[in-house]
Image (cartoon, one colour):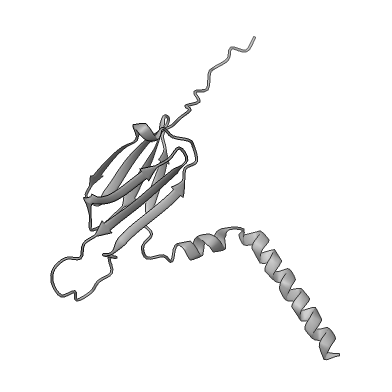
Amino acid sequence: MIGKAAVEAARMSSQASQAAKKILGDVTGEISETKSLDRAPLDLIDADVELIALVALPGASKDMIDLRVTEDSLYVDAKASPREGRYLRQELNSISLKREIKLPAEVKPEQVRAMFKDGILEVHLPKLVVVNAQKVQVD
């Protein structure tokens, strides 16, 4: 009798787990990814002819940024130096910040422009193919 109850409980637990995966999808992967302390926050903007990435790199210097772009990905690794003095409270990561994303559109790596100001890396990624919709006269 106890064996049947245990088997039934295990089956129901498995079904509940599968249902949760269907409902949540990839959310659980995103949640675990956001816990990383060395992950640089990033905004990605889709403009007409380019993608614009804004990457927050507090404490980093321009000389310590490693920026790499392929046709379909963006990689940033920035080293930050700790300031002199005794920290009373330290919440900013002073070791390194990294970020790698797959881009939603192919870009031209050889035409990428980047600037760094006030702790924000702004990367302009020209799209490889720009699709402009043409208005069609209906007869």
